[in-house]
Structure formats: C-alpha cells, structure tokens
Image (cartoon, rainbow over all chains, first blue to last red; front, side, top):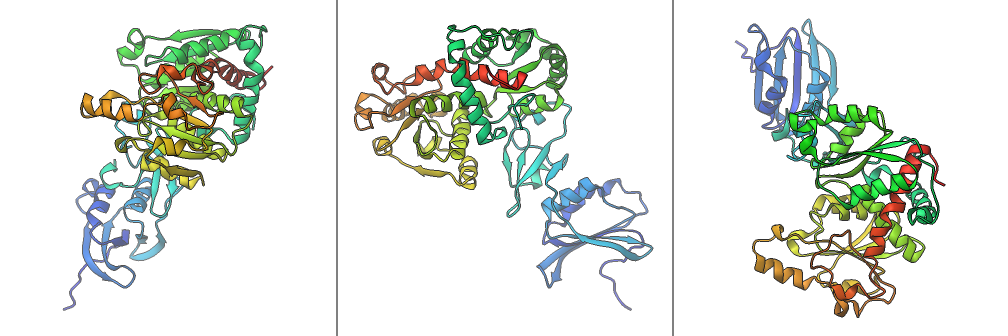
Length: 152
Length: 310
C-alpha cells in the first residue's frame, strides 16, 4: 500500500517552499483554528527540497487566503509559493511578493508610536529595503526587520 | 509642487528646492519679524496651536509669526483641561480642530502623532515635535542660521556634538545636511552615538559622514559646530555625567583651534554644554538661531496658507 505523507486536498490552498521551521508561524497567520471542523490541515516539517535544502509545507482545506494573510506570509516566509486548488486541480500558483505598503499585518515595535495608543488607525509600513526586508512605520518612521513577534 | 495646503511632518517631506524656497522666503520675512514692516498676508486666517506637551519657545514663536502677518491663533496649551483627558482620541480631537482653523500646529508626546493628524485633518498640519520623532521647523531654522552665516549650505563641514542618540533635532538636521551635500563629523560619548538606523539612512542617501572621538580634531576646518544638550538621566550616575559633560564642554579653549569663521549652534535651552564665556565671541550664533525661529515660521505659514510669501 502506498503511504501518503501528506493528504491531497480537493479545495483549498497549498503553501509550499516555506523556509525550514516556519510552518507553525504560517499556521498562526492562517488562523486555522477558525476553520470549520470538517477541514483538514496538513503540515509537513523538514521536507527535502532541491531549491531550499529543507522546507516546510502547509495544506489547508476550504480556505483561500486574504491579501492581508498573503502579505504576512511574504514577510515571514519570503520563499513561499501559494497554490490554489479547486476540484483537485491547481488553478493558480504563484510566489509570494511583498507589496510597497503593508497595512494591518504588524504592530509597530515602538511602544511610543501613536498606533500603539488606542487610536482608531491601522498600523502601516512601507518597504524601506527589500534585501534583507526592512520596513518603515509610516507614522513614527521606525525601521523594522524582525517580524515574527509583531504579527497581529 | 507648491507648498500651499501641504503638511510638514518630517523634514523628509520637503525637497531640496522647497527648503531653498522656504529659506529665501524666511530672509524676506526678517524685517516683518523684527517689526520694521507690517505684514497683512495672513489677515483673517486662524492657526490652531495644539500643544499636548509643554513648550514655550516653539509655541510662542508660531504665535508671534502668525500675529506678525496679521493672523490670529487659538491655543490648546494645557492638555489637562481638554477633552483628551476625558479619553477622546487624538484623531477625533484633530477632526474637530481642523473645522475651527485654517491650519494646525501640533506638538504631541507620541511619535507619529503628527502624521496621524495629517491623515484625518482637512487642513494642513505642521509638526512641532512628536515625542522623540521629528521637529522639522527646528531644522529649518538651523539651516537658515547656517545659510545666513555662509551664504550657502553646500560643501559645509558640520560637526554634530553631544547626544546624537536621543536628540531628535540632530536626526532631522543630518538628513537635511545630506540633501545639501554637507560633510558631517559626529562626536559623542559611546552611549549617545547616532542610532544605527539613522546612520544607515544617511549612508543610503549618499551623505558624507565620519565619526571622531576628539572634539579638537573634529573642529579642524569645520564651519559649524552644532551642540546638543546631554541629559543627566541618560547616564548611570551624577559622577559619570559630570565627567562626560566636562570632556565635551565647549569653551574658548576648545574653540581656539577652530577657524575664525566657525559658528556654534545649539537648539536651546542649554545647560552646561557651552560655557557662558563663548557668548561674547563671534562664534556664538545660538541666539541668532533662536531669533530666526519667527521669520522661518512666518515663511512656512505664509507659503502653506497662501502659496506665497511677501
């Protein structure tokens, strides 16, 4: 009998080429706890990859990603590719890419930034540098290059 | 793009040509600022001074600038008495203020407050200091003083001395000097060095920046010595503060090796960084710098509110 390491899905999203060890962060971004109880989530950690050496893979049934989630993944796992599966076929496959402006994904690490003081405003960053990725808060102008702890 | 209706939140919002235009307008404002000519350019205009943090000289110089051009001001100078204390958000307060006046000058303890205000206000917002963030009009008057002394801002050698880490005026000034191709020499105690990210942004902009440990060596060939206040609370104990403050103190001895045309600037108020004996020398330009606050702010208000300056 052939043993499946990761179950194929009929409808949903496959996030492949996630940097080794980052799948759990991707799950956090996806908010998989909000999925209905009939949806399967498969996670493969530490999988051989010709491109990356080692990689992680996440498959989520019955979920297509909002632009906000795609942007968050682009920040945490810039090598990731996203495939949308409908009726067991790959309908769309693309690499994640960072837009010039990112709103509502991260909070500003500056505790004195106005966005951390109860104002009715989304945090917002523009891309200061792409390699390595550095963002700049459009309000307080603080530069940010560590994102994991700042995810909303 | 003209300056009419524009927000001025960070010195980065201004292109080099716009800074040139502002400085030229500020020079024309001097006789009005000194009361030798009467200005009417801002008659019927109302400026809202929203100061959520204490300030004397910045608030008074904006107020004076507006009145010298025939305009009027309404002021929040004590946030304790305003609705902010009742829990109103800054966004709501600013929306209300923008319905009252023709422009808003904002000082606030949180970084990014002025940028936020600009996004919700229908009227132009001028940042008069947001926490440890930006204070662009201070930079404009620093530049105005240098330009008055040397006729140009290009090719100057400027020594930045003191608290380069927390001093917001220094960060804005360094950015502007980079625009004009000035050379910068940084002199500070190790714990108050320019933050890596500011340094990086200067390098990014192609600025000529070097660091120097010895003040007397940095002063060789320098045109401007920009001194900032070192705050006692940044140091472990009073003894350490006294030792460091003493080794960076500017007095006539230190200035003996400098060029005769060197000018000394300071955003004021000063404490012990500059010895009073320097006040009487031709190097002392910090009081001139303070007095240019009014014409510089007149130029800015006039250009933002009417698009021209008399």
